[in-house]
Amino acid sequence: MKKIIAAASLLFFVLIAALLPSAVRAEAPRDSYSGLSGTLSHYDEAYEAIRRGALDGEILINISLLGIREKDIVPLFTDVISSCPELFFINSTVTYSYNTFPPDHPVNSVSLSYRVQGRDLREARKDYESRVSYLAGLVDPDLTDAEKALFVHDFLISLYSYDTDLAVYDAYGMITGGSGVCRAYSLLYMDIMNRLGIDCAMVISDEMVHSWNVIKIDGKWYHADLTYDDPNPDRTGQVLHDYFLLSDEEIASAEKPHSGWRSAVSCSSSYPGTPFWEGIRTRMAYCSGYWYYFDPVTKDLMRTTRSEKAATVARQGHRWYTDQSRTVSWAGCFASPAEYGGYVLFNTPDAVMAYDPSTGTIRDLLSFGEDRQVIGITVFSGELYCMTAFNVNADNRKNIEKIPLSGLDPENLENPLPFSDVSSVNFYYDAILDVYRKGIFNGVSDTEFAPEGSLTRAMFVTVLGRLCGIDTEKYGTCVFSDVPAGEWYSPYVAWANECGLVTGTGNGRFSPSSPLTREQMYKIARSFIIYITSGAGAPIPDFGDVSLSGFPDHSSVSSWAEGSLLFCYGAGLMRDIQPGSPLRPGDPASRAEAAFVIYGISARLREFEATNNRPHIDN
Image (cartoon, rainbow, N blue to C red):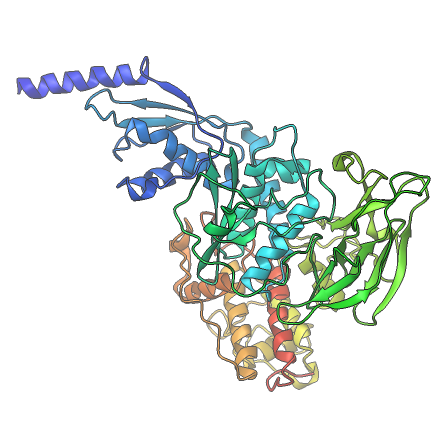
């Protein structure tokens, strides 16, 4: 008993000492990637405790039961902040307390500090989620994983620049300020690729004081260094592909001397064949099934696919002059392509042109005076970014003109959305634009869409019926007692029931005026996809490797909806959430969420329309 009391007394004393004079404040390296996960028995629990505590805004996180030693706590904290771009608001310092007995000094708690807190933090997190979701939503889901990686690689490089002030190290700072260091590039690229279902991580070289990414394509890992592929000085629209999808051997070669990186994976294989992006030094813009770029030698606008030989779209031959006298020109091509509204926009020294792939015609979109010339362009969120200067080595950030595309050509390029409450930076913007253009999903008024508003069960099946173009005259009666004939939604509900999309809410009722819940929406969406898939005679997509266990409220999903949520998550119809965020299955689905789901399943409908075999869909 005395030994127990003595031991207990000693422990109490040591804990007090650990919490006060033994507290340590350590600066976590800004760039790190370690293999701790294979050496610490409770690594996953400790990692998740810190990550979840940070997302919840906790100051003190107790990890005393996990046996994390003092020597491992800073590398562990560094792993968290180097692999969780969404934790942009955490300071890169950690305060921890440890027990001075036993000798390996187990850590009791970790204290976090934040750059922003409270309401500002909630707004910043919401803004970050909206912006990154928007970027991920720009990627065509029909592209291969390699093409998705290429699209994001080129888009980010054409839009953002390297922060020569060495001040921005996080993804949020980069997307709000327009520039960042290598760590910011790596974190943002990693976040977007992971949201697209492609494994991507950041690797660090202390020797080079540099970070970049490793990415898994078709079961193999490759290096991708966006910073080294971004020309210096930065030029809008100019993108290199020298450091994209390389093996360990290739990125460590004399021509691409990277060294000293730490990575838990091996990039042992070269990318197969001759990549269609090899040697291209402009952004590759994807439009209507083709990749567009400028030939570095001929300066011609070209187009290609991953399997077709490149073809000339427009012959350029322009010169970019060194000053206003226009007597001496720079070597090289400073034109770049960008996609907008189904057009390929590109620049000459004095104008921005628009190429229409459907007609093969090219016309002037915007002309510039003789006091400056266009060195490159890109398009983002409905704006044309033009770098204008005579000096092609000028500071990009000081020479960018942003021009709203809606005012350039009302006939073809004007943004048709009249809604003041739909921002182009939201992930659902393209979805609302698509369903509005089709005339299947209108606003609540001439000027408002109410993206956060709810919609009824009747509204949702009506939009799906409009998408299919059903003949409402064929569906006059309905089996549900609360769906009388003659209502605007009656034929659509009857059609949805006949096709097996809905079975009602019980007791012979459909509850047409009840708010549509998220899990109901995903169940109907899955039924619709199976309906059109089986109608085209194609196999039903299988997403068997998907799990809901990463969502904190997965246990609240109704048993009848579990398979549907798994299916829709695997099919990319739940872009508004990611592992770790709540599913909110019983919450009313918002109009924006419904538009995004319909946008996704309409893309699948187009796939099957292309087969000219739609036996179950009326027109």
